[in-house]
Image (cartoon, rainbow, N blue to C red; front, side, top):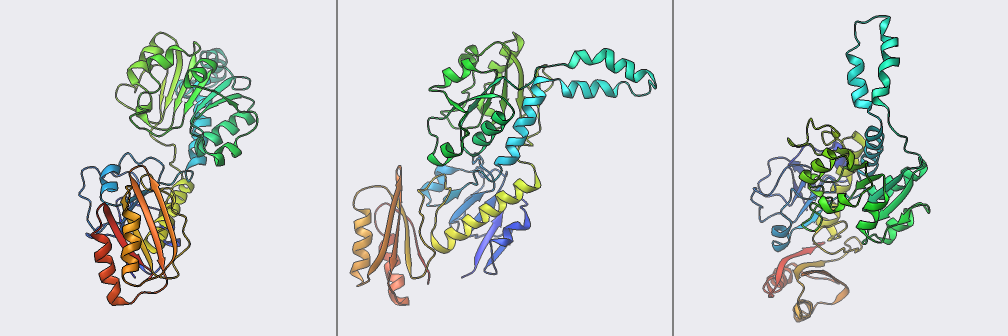
Length: 392
């Protein structure tokens, strides 16, 4: 079977290491089976009925209408961890930039051009205006201990910092990767009050929007430095500007510039460079393409932001793949429909996530005529959102 893939952004050619000869990739396909996207906003774009999945080459999915996709039975993937090292390196740079006025020092040094032998004397006289503290021995608070947060925490420990982490939803996998020296904070309030630096690494949602606001900043040590390489909306801009103005915050380093922040003393605006490395872009593209391939061919779901994980084996026999409401009797109706055609189920996986469920049924054998009738029967089940028969 051939699959049509539409790209909404230019992606690394590395996607073709995952997509073989049965995949046609274009930026203009009208009826794609899947969409690969990086930064393009999809909120105002119509979603073709043909689309089975959307893969975001990056961690954040704010540019994708998640709820509309869920209701349409469209699986949405992201690529957590693929850009983690790139972002971690930028956070480390941000820590250094927030301490010593490196940017200001470089800009001032440029003004010395043309002074000839007087440059050395001017440097020795003027450098005191740009001094700042070292990182070693200071306390860093890491909010969110996912793929990026864990790397940042471990790197900070290696730099001699004391690290406090807060993440009530930390996974077992990420917990195992943390250096033993990372201390656990029992609440966001406890973290904010204990640190000289705070860096945030959580998704943007209604729950997390503005989480670094007036109250959180009021708990901080005077002269704290705040870093935001996750999402701009996590930090309340009005609150951070007030805190900078009265000296509670010494510096704010953000990868998300805005008109209100640009040019403010104490604010370092970086033009969203966190994941902008060739390695990161390639990693994200490869991961997005692999997830798309596995989903289209076998119904395997990994790193979906709206559907449950389905760790099925690759297709070796006819596979009935169903996305449906997570309500009673739907799975029973599916199995009854299969049995009604005299078909045998050799394996079954049923997973749910909130109001949505996925049922995957491997069938020993099925002929072409029965195939169409079975699909029609299953699609008519109340609460059904998407039905496919793979492996045929």
